[in-house]
Amino acid sequence: MNQFIDVGYMLKSIPSIASYLPVTFWLAVASMAFGLAIGLGAALVRVYRTPVVRQVALVYISFIRGTPLLVQLYLVYYGLPKLINLASRRWTFMAGFSVNMIPPELFAVLAFSLNMGGYLAETLRAAIEAVDRGQFEAANSIGLSRTATLRLVVLPQAALIALPNLGNALIGMVKDTSLAFMIMVIEIMGQAKIIGARGLRIFEVYIAVSLIYWATCIVLEQGFRLLEKRLGAFERRVAE
Amino acid sequence: MIRLTGLRKNFGKLEVLKGIDLEVENGEVLALLGPSGSGKSTLLRCINYLEHPTGGTIELGDLRVDAVAASKADIRALRASTAMVFQQYNLFKNRTALENVTIGLTAVRGIEKRRAREIAEHYLSKVGMSHKLDSYPRRLSGGEQQRVAIARALALGPQFLLLDEPTSALDRELVAEVLETIRAVAEEGNAMILVTHELGFAREVAHRVVLMDKGVVVEEGPTAEIFTNPKEERTVKFLGSFVRPFVYAI
Ligand SMILES: Nc1ncnc2c1ncn2[C@@H]1O[C@H](COP(=O)(O)OP(=O)(O)OP(=O)(O)O)[C@@H](O)[C@H]1O
Ligand SMILES: [Mg+2]
Image (cartoon, rainbow over all chains, first blue to last red; front, side, top):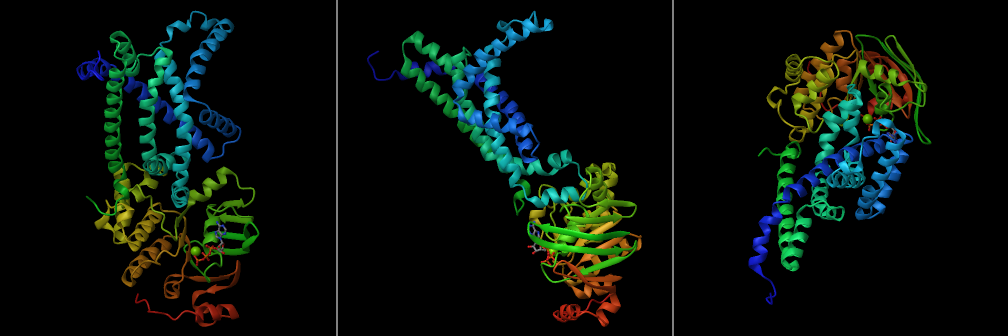
């Protein structure tokens, strides 16, 4: 107990903390996936200047970027049940539905997705607008529909442009999932806190958990580097 | 038939097209000549609505579109009946040479994949690109990209072809080949507008010539007449400003 750090204890705590890595992983991946969908929608609305919806998107993006993630998490966690209660009192089909049936993970994913969507909207908008005008014109000139243009020509090119930012966003998301413990989701951070409190070795478990985050992020970084290489085959002048 | 009446286009205060009247019969190749900046590309781009004209009407066959009041359906129809070769080629960067040609066939014309590939290979071989079907545009030279762009336009079998300097990056021998291909397409009865800086090329392939300057048509007439007996001062000057580097042997 009087050593500066109990390395043995730290190492022993790693497997038990890491066993919650899947929770962290799925929180991040699900939030990223929904965030991409929301972000793409908001980005397209901005690129094509869809009236009205565009104003909504602008307010949404501004709000997400202008408030802390933790506050957004609490807003969802405390706000959504209120909305559900209100709804269940108004509409009979909602009557049997109880807020307690919703696992806290769902609140976390919802809040993280909305947050992610706000940030990715800007990333994706910039990437779509960075695609050469000539690509849109050529697509128009051969009569491709807007959806076909996006799917077959523009988005693959935009994805490559956005990829480094998407990678950073996912890595950021993995780290931000540590906030989910604030609403009782037990992921690696939550488990670390629990073990730390139990063994009274707070510092050791935080080192352990930081190592796990670090390793995860390194793996993700490498993964994105590979992905960039694969997706970017058409950008290279010389075949490999 | 392509018929433009009073076509105008402003970019802000800049008047680029100041009321163009122009007609191209089916089966006819019209060469559009004129100094740089005279509005040739803008004119082509107005016909398929890549630029929104400020005024005038566009007629393509039976389709008559008031440029200002064009509906989405009008624009779609204009684009469906035309194909364009861009001055900057604009090949899809994420698609191979072959895919650049098949994409319009499958996604727009709804042609089945295998058949689309056959058509694409046919046109790519006509422009001498059979050996680079699977290359991405990044790995093609300017001339090669231009040839793929021509194949992409021709493969769609459009009624109206808009070619913006389609041979600017090609060697002499290739120009002859491409010219042959373009001519064959014209003989199928398509109407074609060909912007070019190469007078020899215009002379070989065009039935009629229009000379544009500063957004107006300066002179127009049958090719032979314009080249041998131009009436307008500006035409004489324009034709004279070219020292023909070589004569096309066709
Ligand atoms: N998008 C645009 N915005 C503003 N001005 C433009 C735009 N496109 C073209 N212009 C202007 O319109 C004029 C005509 O351009 P255009 O490209 O039609 O000329 P061109 O005859 O095709 O020239 P070139 O032979 O060099 O290709 C030029 O002065 C050009 O600067
Ligand atoms: Mg031009």
